Amino acid sequence: MSDGRALAREFLEQQRLLGGDAVILPDGPPPRADGRSGGQADGNTPSRSAGPVVRPSAAATDLPRPGISYDPPGGDLFSNDPVPQAVSLEAIAQLVAGCTKCRLCEGRRHTVPGEGAAAARLVVVGEGPGRVEDETGRPFVGPAGELLTKILGAIELPRERVFICNVVKCRPPENRLPQFDEIAACVPYLFRQIDIVKPSVILAMGGTAAQTLLNTKQSLGALRNFVHRFRGIPLIVTYHPAALLRNPNWKKPTWDDVRIARRLIG
Ligand code: URA
Ligand code: SF4
Image (cartoon, rainbow, N blue to C red; front, side, top):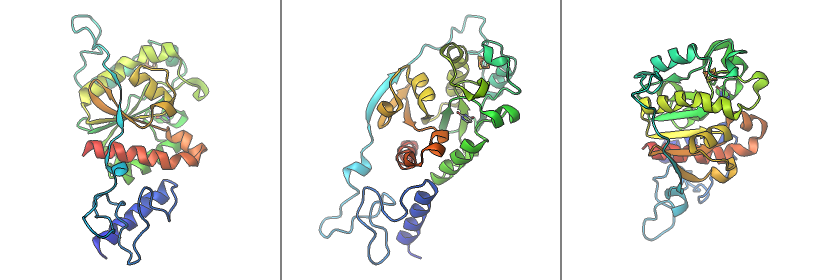
């Protein structure tokens, strides 16, 4: 099979996985009659139009505009607070395991600090542990997690190569939204995890992650389609996978967002 065909097939498979239309190649010309890629699917193949070689259209190559930059102060290294001084993800996980800084400690079975590679180039941030996460102590292992695993596979970033965590590390009762004071109590762990991993890109999934990491009350819809920055690190906002399970129409825009994140990683 030609490279073009292989790439087109892979692209269509990704579209199917993410619920996109399996026939239409978005933003691009239709597939060529000879079955080779239509020019956009792999971001490389020249357009089929005659004349000068046309690279994928601006829409496909331009990154979204810069958005919010949030640069929260780091912890005071001279204070007694151990969180800003923790030097490893394991050290953070240990601090989280003993944490009683907010009421969410009362109902938890396990803390869920996050997991993945300390050298990850992508940090994925969700909202908080759900039922299965609380039972296992691992992030994103329930139904939303299965979808996240597929999404990461589709951009060729297997779960193990990413660091996956949440804004709050203990499960809110009945999966309610974490409250403002709970987020405020927990967020130093997240900030320190990001400092330790030093990823190239952060993917904020859902309103809680986006609003917390950008220190804003703007809606998820208003925050998508920008390259924001958290302490200088590019940050992309997308839908939460649990929301995608409820509303499959959001799969296509999510796919667009994660491809932008992938391109930023390089
Ligand atoms: N939803 C989240 O936000 N995080 C998880 O870990 C699982 C579901
Ligand atoms: Fe501590 Fe965060 Fe758990 Fe609250 S949610 S008890 S701040 S680890």
